[in-house]
Length: 113
View 1 (cartoon, rainbow, N blue to C red):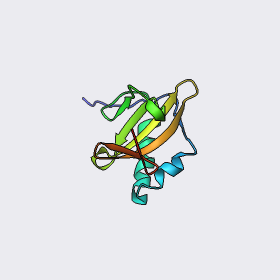
View 2 (cartoon, rainbow, N blue to C red; view 1 turned 180 degrees about the horizontal axis):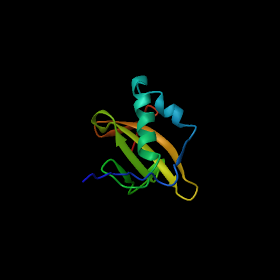
View 3 (cartoon, rainbow, N blue to C red; view 1 turned 90 degrees about the vertical axis):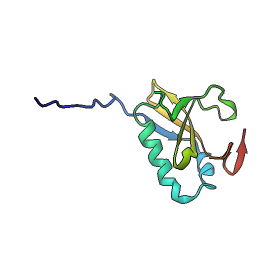
């Protein structure tokens, strides 16, 4: 007996929209990580951006970044992307990209609390 597994793709991809300020957030991050960040955003947020996983979760207290969700990835889970999801229009808005160093989060070269 042969079993065929078919993975269903979601009906619609989500469009990913970057806030203009995100360019400034990437400047202090080593360039060798920029493609890793872009790839992680594309793979983790393109289809089910509002499904909670081990490294993708809604923020309990959004704070200054006002992002409703966060993903963690990279070496030692050092990178953070904060975003909002508009399910009706199938859009994901990238609000901030930061780097975790120890217990501190840095965005655009400045520590964020």
